[in-house]
Image 1: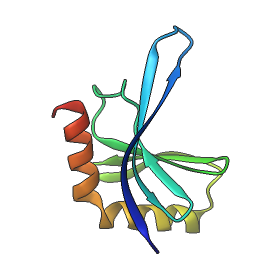
Image 2: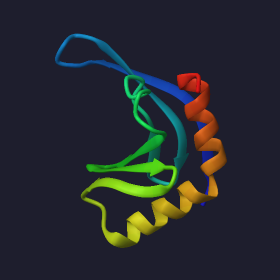
Image 3: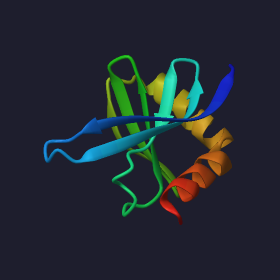
Image 4: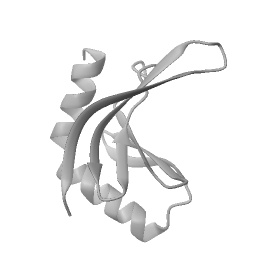
Length: 99
């Protein structure tokens, strides 16, 4: 599986009309790994989406927080991808949030 490391940023306005930036830090297959720029006060984590499916994982310790639509086999694959790229994902978080 090919992994692409990115630093693209999407932006949207939330209900309070505040701009929220959504940096995409990695893509692997159909999975997009990203975080929301307004979540820097939470501990390090990564969001993952593909199609209409979504998941959130804490990075330390690696743990599933929430999942919508993914099957267990897909969550296992996502967990493996996160584990294989954990240093990059942590460094991306720290670079973005200044940790």
